[in-house]
Amino acid sequence: MVSTAIDKYIFVIVKERFDDKIYVNYSQKEIVDQIDDLKHELVREAMRKTGVLNGIEITTLADIPSEGSGLGSSSSLTVGMLNALYTYQGDSRPAEQLAQEACEIEIDILGKPIGKQDQYIAAFGNLRRIDFRSDGTVDVERIVLSDQRRRQLSNSLMLFYTERTRKSEEILEEQKAGIQDKSAVLKQMRDQASHAPQILETGKLDEVGAMLDKGWQMKKSLATRISDRELDEMYDKARYAGALGGKISGAGGGGFLLVYCPPDRHEAVQQALSDYREMPFSMEQDGSKVIFNVRREGWPK
Image (cartoon, rainbow, N blue to C red; front, side):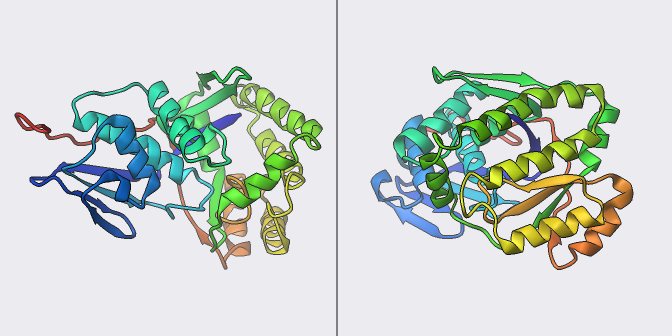
């Protein structure tokens, strides 16, 4: 696959507590004595994985809806949580380990029917080609673009909120169940991703739009709830206004519509999708990173 990080963030704040309780602040507030009592499963399992078991306060803040956005927010949270908890103990870990352990938490421990793409791009950042091997290994390669070409690509991508989120698990379960019947389509989608770096590196960026459109038509055939009448109408409005292609990000069914659109057609697309909120963004070169760290002598215990 080909993926990029964007400049929308999940912030994870980790702070030592004087007592042995566990405080977790997100859309809810949890105060518990034992890690087993935490309802937030991603925080709970990241704490277990890193060995931080009590006496801590964790706060998360998100630039986007933290669930069901299609932008990898859950996996970004898991990667960021691992990074913060390891750093809290004075033990930084490489991007590959953060991605791998995030996959273990979400897929192996919690049994979510998801892939590994979100964890790896959140950990590594930048614009990447990612190959997932049948033996479980993952190869991550940076796609090198000039600054001018990167800006051109970034300026041609637009995101619009569909005004609804969705639980990806149901869509992905149906998609997973039909893998054997859809193997030909999946191979075509894989081959698209193999060809995409060449298009990007040679500067034929408008071909990205056509590629997105073809990929979206194939993706819609994988499960019944990936798209619906409203999402199809939203996509068609963007295309008629000048977008060359696009897709519903993530599993589909809601979240954000990504479109590739030449800058001179941006205003027309914005008018066509005036009922939907646009989220301006840029491509991000960094993956998960520590932006502030205060260490005190003897803390944590």
